[in-house]
Image (tube, rainbow, N blue to C red; front, side, top):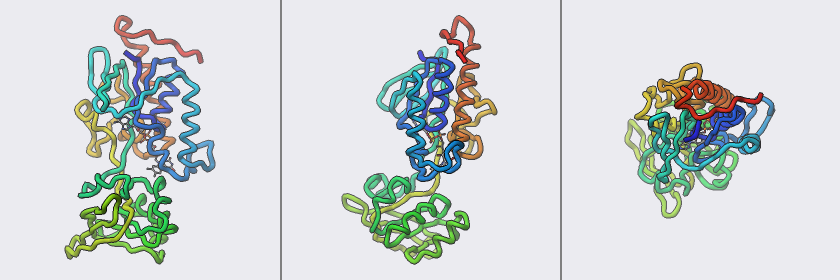
Length: 315
Ligand SMILES: Cc1cc2nc3c(=O)[nH]c(=O)nc-3n(C[C@H](O)[C@H](O)[C@H](O)COP(=O)(O)OP(=O)(O)OC[C@H]3O[C@@H](n4cnc5c(N)ncnc54)[C@H](O)[C@@H]3O)c2cc1C
């Protein structure tokens, strides 16, 4: 049994890992990837110490820092977190089990799906959830962006520079993005903004060739000849595996107290997966640090008989 398992290797999980390692806790990080959402960010200008850095570069710096410490890492999708005697059990999709005295959940958020026919079939074959990663692949092709909020318009503004036509599809009667993005979008000669419009079906052969959409009040249907569909309708917390262990808030986030603790002793959470307001890299990293320090305090105070040996920090 490990002393600590950290689920997730985004800014929150990796920072928690560094702090846990400096406290010499026997720590295992389990994650599907390294970096999380930070790898999707093209430009970061608000992480202290870096005036400007791309998301991919910042994650490389994180990895370099984490490699410095003696941390075990396993890759896999966590499907269940449950309580066992003296701690917790983490189960992964490929049927592995890992036990620990304490757990930090730092599983962040994932893109919300449209749930229309064709979406799953063409995922990665024209349907994408990351404009920063994939926009360059669609240079020269007509594309549709679903969502008129900040993420949608941010994607559209990137795509307008490299594609002949961008359809922006928004289900309400107005765009919700910041003025500066809206001004750029409305001014572009190669944009068509479809308000009060719902995506109905994504079609194609091997890859996407069109999306059909429907006007909400007139019922008029159109088939838009696009090769790319950028789904930008928000993010959902990755809490499926914990939903029957803790009571989530109405957004599906894990409620935490100011010490990153959940309602269950020994279970901590940090970063975008929690109800802490403002989802930012620096905030996730700070919360990850706090969660690791709190996990350490929890572990050193466990009754001597039940507790594994916990080394005291050297600094
Ligand atoms: C396009 C975009 C641009 C952004 N730009 C900025 C910016 O400029 N500045 C800024 O401060 N913030 C920015 N953000 C927000 C920032 O990226 C997040 O706040 C931050 O990454 C949250 O970190 P996190 O560690 O909590 O979660 P995440 O980054 O979401 O990491 C979650 C980790 O958990 C793992 N995971 C998830 N589910 C499971 C599971 N079931 N099993 C195993 N592992 C799992 C993932 O693989 C990942 O490693 C941006 C976000 C986006 C989407």
